[in-house]
Image (tube, rainbow over all chains, first blue to last red; front, side, top):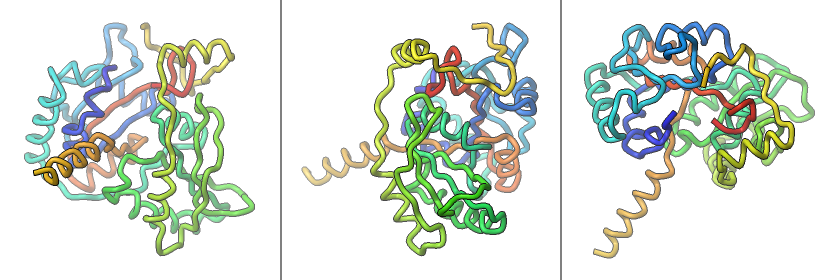
Length: 230
Length: 56
């Protein structure tokens, strides 16, 4: 996929008026069924990447769906302009819950792919987790924090429940704690921003990364079979 | 003039660092789209290449 469109400032700004969903392909049977209904390549199977702009009920494609934005747009400015027109048509209002990844294993890998840290809320008390989830959601959608972390919730016993910031390993299969915060703190937002600002991921070269991973025996086990023929 | 140029460059720099905030599941994202009335930008990508993780 040509992901360059998605990092362009005009597209990022236009995305603020959309609900942005990025699914991890081959990590959920149910989501693969959703993708199957949106776009199938020439193979007739779910391919590695999918792109679509959809109505708020998720049922109507608003532009040509495909493997990537360049199926529908000649450049990022055209994509941003189109998104702006669509956003003005639908309107809508701001609303946000904590955008969590389904589990820590996947969150660490996604964070490694993005070059971002993981922000994990961890406690064995479900009521405490729910309360912290609400508090962190209010912070996570502050403009200064948008797109700065990958979030997840973990219900398990730990010596110090709270908010943990993790640096993913290069191949997203391990991580290292780089910070801890009290989610009940009145300064949660500014403290989190400070912690996240201190994280800097190393640049990756895709070819070198794959070569090194193969040499080291790195293997990512997907949850469902990979069906991309390419 | 220099101040304006510096402000422009800083703004460009800040924008360059901004990223999209993604929901990571269909159910959660769709729920938010329905509640907010906002359209959906959907992307799917595998978080591995040739089963080597850590890269889209």
